[in-house]
Image 1 (cartoon, helix red, strand yellow):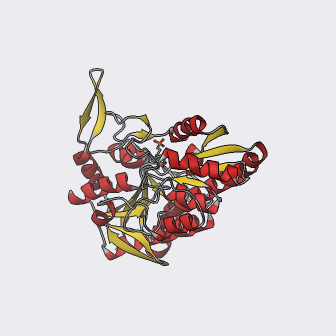
Image 2 (cartoon, rainbow, N blue to C red):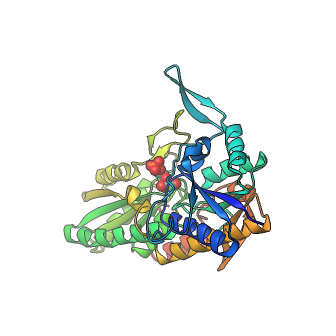
Image 3 (cartoon, rainbow, N blue to C red):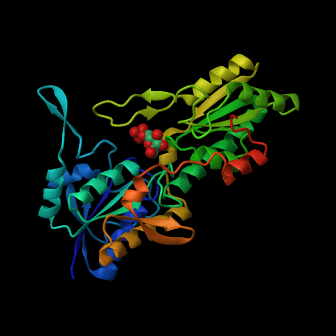
Length: 362
Ligand code: F6P
């Protein structure tokens, strides 16, 4: 049967989104002869039919190695609590009925939502309202339960490891403590794995509150042994024992979630107070979200995209494509968004880091 499927990318962008879009469009058209409608700017696009356009094989030509998303995205557009200006004030309204109506108006047999935890929670609520939804797990943070890896994470790791390699040479030349602040929100995956790969001396992650005295003691011990520089990776969500995360901007009516940032400077001040060493901070920021996806993310994105189409063909709605071991499978979106996939403080990767002599703040 001929089908019409919609596809959108929601939340923060990440490398590999275009690989998924291409995978969906190619397999929908080549294998099934279906029509694909690209929805611009995440769920926002379903509130404005002018933002919905047909995607052809021509539309996805050459996009596999490109970062970002040809569809655009937003990490603000939750139709269930949508900020709207009324009489000079921002009021929050529920626009979800309009989204459901537009899905019907467009004649969509399925909606493929590519997103992280926030976007997939919205997809789940739409599924409960009767929209036939299929999810694809995206985020550099790798914090989605239900899949071993999200696409985008591997590319972000490469970027962070490359930054650490570069910081190493300058740290060594100047006998400095170099701090690299990386993203990851409440999960420490990027900090932990790039820190191991980049030979960091200290890694601070949200899952293990750090103790400043111990961090300083570890750096001092290194310098006493003749290593006159140290490399510290701090996840943006890391916080000290008994303290709080460093928040760059609190949540408000426009931004549903707080924006993290500043832990690098915060830690630098503490180190400068306890050690007579020069400290510099690099905030890697959105560089982690940009650039061409790695081979791993291109392949994973392509596999997720084609799987999403196969899920539509099989009528597997309310589910998300996932990676388990080396196999692509499916998991219910409800299970995938129930809680976050965080680093296990007693798990094998943390143990590996500690066996390598890396200090994890405890
Ligand atoms: O979830 C992806 C992510 O890059 C986080 O690691 C980070 O905290 C956040 O998004 C930054 O969001 P924004 O693009 O709004 O600054």
